[in-house]
Length: 323
Image (cartoon, rainbow, N blue to C red; front, side, top):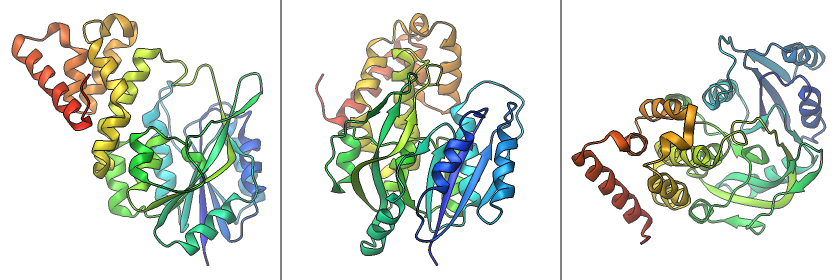
């Protein structure tokens, strides 16, 4: 019998645990399902509520707790938490939910499974989503996609987007694939969706099924423009590492971010202020030579600066743009 795995990641989200879990339990699953909760060392009582639900629904809910020594937010820690759940998932299909978000539709899983059943080459069934702002108002994301089959390379190169939480994926995560993803450690949001798309077709439903909570102190919203462009520029290399067949459309997708970093290479230390060394360390950790050269441009010698320029020309050549 078909089975669906829902992987939910938490860290100090006690105010949202019940809503996220109840939204999953409210879905009209036409098959067997399991809910895998990963707590990243919460200290606010999040895990107590997860345990309460696991006791109430022992056949459907399992939880995993990670030890934690630091208190800083980290995309890398969230990725590891998510990958641990994926490693333990036993479903034929898999979904990913952030602990402060929730589903707002009860029929989408059945709709997705119908598409999978009738189209064996489909790997991703994607839906739209809604932002939940800090004033509790909702805003449906304005998609530039029409319902139906979507060309995956166009989805990437033209900057299309839907939250990975608003997708149902065919679970192809075997041991070999998980080992690669653990090594790259960039299994978050858009990287997740693009990773799965390399294994099959994409079908899009034009209705919101996922509510994406916006927080002023989130990793993304707390970042200034320079940081956001750097994050997107890093994503180019990282997502390429897990989905190399998309290297050209990914280069096109991240072009504006890479261009911004390149054009501001002389000012990055001042634009990043206290976070400058953090991003230098990140470039070293990711072995991203181009970003490291740009970050350290003011201290480079002549030959290294020429190398930086040539890497920029190579990148533009891949994108095939003259700017």
